[in-house]
Length: 199
Image 1 (cartoon, one colour):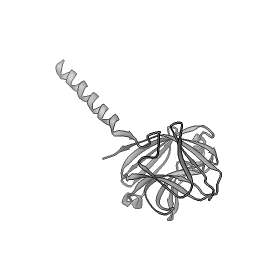
Image 2 (cartoon, one colour):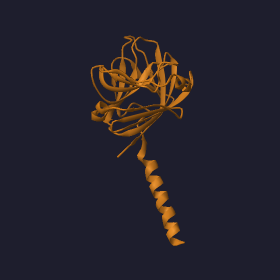
Image 3 (cartoon, helix red, strand yellow):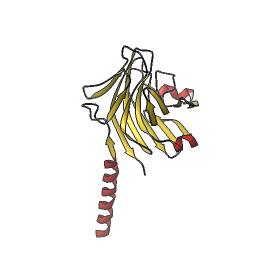
Image 4 (cartoon, one colour):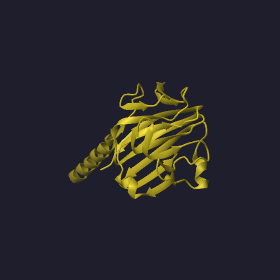
């Protein structure tokens, strides 16, 4: 009986440690821990992070000050107006020229959840046509990204969108960044941005 109780306690401790491993990287108050690149607008409103096209209508990025190698990232996004955006990983930047890989966040049938290599090979993988339907237009969506070694898997609203194994990604390193596309007229809301670093 005592051994069973100790086993249960051990399981609870392990589960607790696992839960604690996931942490928020957006505090809902300000942009602490992040750096903006470009002239596009990044601000906090009602506990949500908002990106908006600025007067220059150029590319803009908001990057983490910390680099992340292997991780599971989860976040919620809501596209308002044109929602062409994305989540970069293992990336670096000079001015507003970003190098790395982007998980697409875009309007319906524009490959949300796919992976694009910036200033490189372009699209590495796009979701199947029938999986594009999982995007909820004008509503909150949940995006999950796992990057481990040379493997990338994405889920949109609980549905797996892509799995990719790529040697170049495996060698990559850098920060996570949110993107606002050029062209103007873009507005996206973000919240519940959480990460779990993987060993």
